[in-house]
Structure formats: structure tokens, C-alpha cells
Image 1 (cartoon, rainbow, N blue to C red):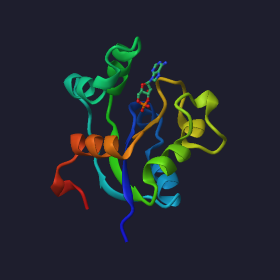
Image 2: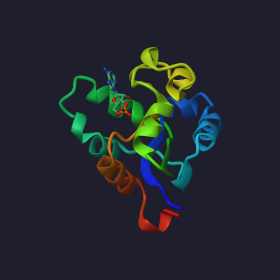
Image 3: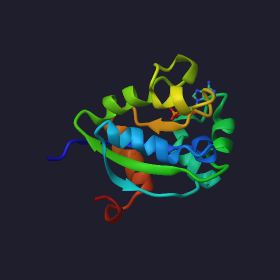
Image 4: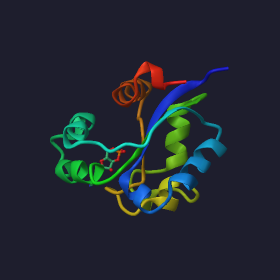
Amino acid sequence: MTGNRTFTMIKPDAVENGHIGAILEKITAAGFRIVAMKYTQLSKRDAEEFYAIHKERPFFGELVEFMTRGPIVPAILEKDNAVDDFRALIGATNPAEAAEGTIRKLFATSIGENAVHGSDSDENAAIEGAFHFSGREVF
Ligand SMILES: Nc1ncnc2c1ncn2[C@@H]1O[C@@H]2COP(=O)(O)O[C@H]2[C@H]1O
């Protein structure tokens, strides 16, 4: 049975802090199937394109600088109700406001360096997944 899909990235802060394994464990324990995953680093151009929707925000420069400073783990995840269930699993954007037990509460350090990304809609999940993966990389 296939569920629907969301897109995530384990961000440079969580990679630097050694949390890849623990975060993947939380994701799979919550019932998500990994259908695509890689270890890679974004160029400045990649990050500016991926986050184009935020380009007028005051934190845009900081966001691009952060997301390009080291490797990330992008992945496409599958589960029923994937987008909403994944956002519940990761918690609020600001880890200070994230619920106990959520990935951001456990592993994020600030609103900017918040450990993981989660798509906010089915449409954006498809766009973001296609940004990072070709058809041959999705299983
Ligand atoms: N006020 C803020 N200051 C710095 N970074 C922010 C702020 N709000 C959002 N962001 C970052 O912008 C990112 C947009 O994608 P995410 O929701 O994955 O995670 C968000 C944060 O990393």
C-alpha cells in the first residue's frame, strides 16, 4: 500500500551535531517509509532557488548562508497523511515553541537553525522532492 508523500531535509546544524541517525530513527519509528534519500551539499544558487518564496524576508541571506555551510540529508517520505503527520513529528518552526518529544524540540537550537525541514502542503512536497531527486532516485 502506498501513502502520500512529504519532503524533508536534515539541515547542516543537525548533521554537524551528529544527529542524522537519531532523526532517521524517529522518522522511521513514526511509520514513514523512506522512498528517496541522499547526502549532499547545496550551492548558493540551489539554496536561493529552493527558498525563493522567502527571498523578501529579512532572514533570507542568513537562511542561504546556513543551508549551504555543510552537508544535508534530503529525503522523500511516504505515509498516509504524510505532510501533516510529519509537521506534527518535527514540531513548531521555533524549537522554543515545539512540543515535547518533537524532532525540533530534541535537536534544534534556534528558529533559523532548526534541524529539519518539512513541506507545508502536498503540492510543495512534490515540487521540493522533484528539486532534489530524479525519477530514478525514488523507490
Ligand atoms: N525569523 C526567522 N529567523 C531566521 N530564520 C528563520 C526565521 N523564520 C524562519 N526561518 C528559517 O526559514 C526556514 C524556511 O523553511 P523551514 O520552515 O524549513 O525552516 C525555516 C527556518 O530555518
